[in-house]
Image (cartoon, rainbow, N blue to C red):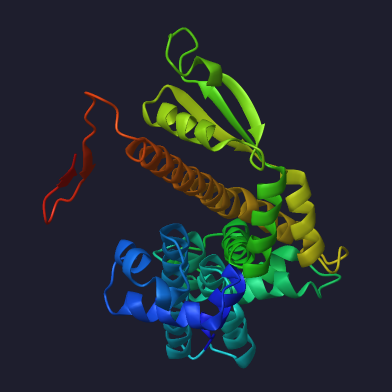
Length: 333
């Protein structure tokens, strides 16, 4: 179990008593404004900005630890938990890493790979994965797996099913996903185009727009998202496909002379195009949106604070509203 207080001390460069007291006050149900205003002596005079950031980070780390325990339990119930896997999960420092490690063991809905396994094609997939056969007849190798009652009518269907199993195995590899996510973040380009080039809209500057994911400004992300939601823009990621496929091939193919290598290569390409790319693209888009929304909230908060804290102006009244659905709105004039 990670010492969360120690982690917070390091990340926020705070003294142990500041973190310990703040966490205790939060756990007792005190609000951030209350702690910032009335518990300065206990927190070492931490302001509301630091307190809120610390609270959000504390919540994330606690959720991370809960998820780690849950994932370890779920994998252990399947009888597939190894000491190495357990340590990898325990050492994960982000939730995404935990989910990547759990992915191969997650109970999925019916997939092409699961259907192929039900048809008894997993041993054929293992033959391809081992890359040991240097000679032989590919049709003869697949012949024992042809079974019309199970839905495998010919050699092609046997190999197609085996490749589906391999594709899912490659897609579920946590290290591959981590690497590809990093490559996309560094090298992918966000592209937006007009849904209808003839239509005049407020999104015209994004009709032929492209910018690296790493550099795109937060306000542009939000504008592009709005345009996409209103069906005025079509958005996609231009990804370094050749670079990623070459990486996967270098990791998976250990014997280029194996007679089954072409099936293996086809499975890798299918895994990347059909399973990995759509999933990682969604993650990158979600990451960009989350980052942009968090920044927008901070900017709005700062602007509102500056507005409310200006000196009184003669004959001008300012009304502040603290919205709440459950307890009603609070007003300050």
